[in-house]
Image (cartoon, rainbow, N blue to C red; front, top):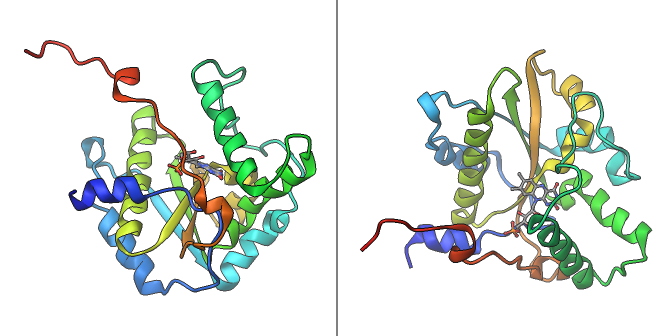
Length: 225
Ligand SMILES: Cc1cc2nc3c(=O)[nH]c(=O)nc-3n(C[C@H](O)[C@H](O)[C@H](O)COP(=O)(O)O)c2cc1C
């Protein structure tokens, strides 16, 4: 297997981390690798703010340290998913949730338990580093795709460095206060957060292996002999 295939298969969303700091030099190395991501017209429409230590704490405080109780997105926010999600996406989302809560032993009726688990997003699942991916609101659909590619590059490069990640759109809920706290320009917005650290190998939630549709379900290969 090539290292790329390996990294693609090894990368998972890690939702529990060891209490082990990630040195600044390693975060820099990670971003130095990821910056080779492609983007249309080479616009490189991304900006990253990495927070550790007190800066990380301040951001978590902003989000009430994971005591989130189901509030909707603030100003400048948008729904994480389209309303009335349709098939097959609806079932995929449902199954992921069921798989995760089963591993955590949180029952369907345990609304509080589920909320608590979701709220852990706002502590970066206890990862020592948080990354925020920032885009200029004047950018179009294309550039949104490109920042996504950049994030995938960060996540794959992290695997190579022995680091784990979890992309976190959940931070979008606090887009308004993050904008102010991070001192973003008027046109900028936080698209997504990301937890970064060393995976806790013993945490049950990290046993989660989400499924994927087969190639035949999403691709049609035409005109081949
Ligand atoms: C852009 C993006 C945002 C995400 N936001 C969250 C999030 O806020 N919280 C979370 O626990 N997982 C989040 N995820 C993780 C997805 O649930 C996960 O990628 C998906 O279930 C596939 O699992 P895998 O990453 O382990 O392969 C996000 C993933 C992406 C790509």
